[in-house]
Image (cartoon, rainbow, N blue to C red; front, side):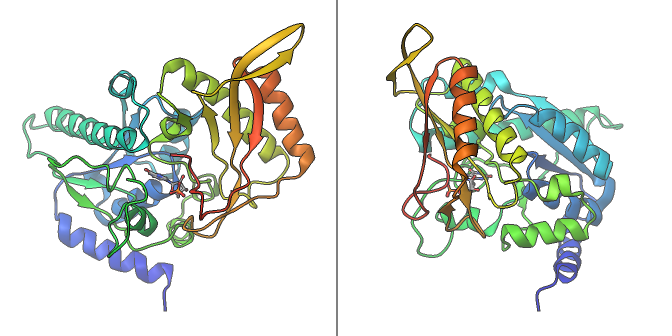
Length: 327
Ligand code: XMP
């Protein structure tokens, strides 16, 4: 007898009991999960909540503006943006190993939240209030399971908000969605009055484009991937495929080059992988049969419009054995 109303009532009561009249911060990513977690906490403790959006420089085109505009417009919540681009890119420089990237990103997120929390206390009316000890995260059940937090499960990958957390974490975590799947979270978001632009959004991982560059992350590589991703997303949306597709990671094989020919000469560029998947809960997935003409348009546009990319390939692997993201 699961209903979104009963989950909301139960979680709101729990959050109130746990938090009391303390201040709370919530990391907002632009995705569904953190948006719904924040909305629940806002319902529970109102303006004791401040949302923190960390711009880690690993975002897709337009993402920062969407959070700053859509979410604030929908909820009226207090939002602080932290520009942490240099810190994240510095910490990731030269790192290619997927788990190493994930751990660095998990740690830097927490450092950014700590910095934001300290600033909020310093700016508060009293100037020196209690430190903020509660951090809200939109962790879902699959994040916990795949980070090895479920009983007897192997660690598949450390999600930034679970297995990627630093050991000296000072915050107490408030994770009201920790037993839920994404479709349930979407239902709760609708019940709480969040608009479809937020609730229906396709998943995007917290570590962002860093785990879609196979190889080390750099400004230049991010710029290439961002262009390719924007084209793929625009064409899939224009083709009306957003509901059929759970998400479509676009991956840059930064350490691979292949020979091509374009205009009057030889090229030696990188491949882009398209990874459109269909899924119910991201625990398993199948590759989406995107119509050939849509794939052709995406391929033409990416190879023509994005410097450095001379080949587009399609990932036709289900999960398992592949995961959805490449790292
Ligand atoms: P995989 O690659 O494990 O992805 O099949 C399953 C789902 O989880 C998303 N994902 C993440 N989301 N933090 C997140 O918030 C993470 O560290 C993370 N890693 C993967 C992925 O996009 C897919 O929806």
